[in-house]
Image 1 (cartoon, rainbow, N blue to C red):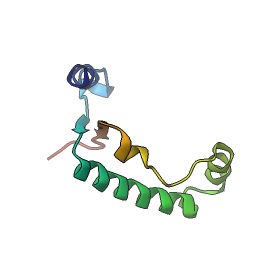
Image 2 (image 1 turned 180 degrees about the horizontal axis):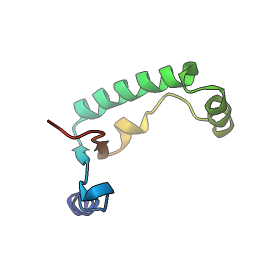
Image 3 (image 1 turned 30 degrees about the vertical axis):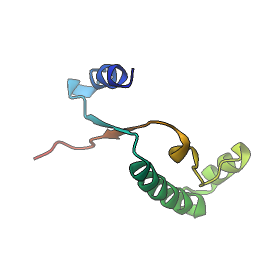
Length: 88
């Protein structure tokens, strides 16, 4: 199911039909822990004010927090990466 999902997503239409995305499917505990550490660091930075006051209100209303324990609990984590400029 994971492989079929990634294959379908990889062929989805995009601007100029370039499909500028890449995917990773993580199942190892070490990879999921490393991802959680990186995501939570970025979230704390964003929640700490870099996201702007409008976002702060939205996050507060949603009860969103920087902690993301589900990244380690989930059996698989699918990560999508977008390429923002052409490789040279």
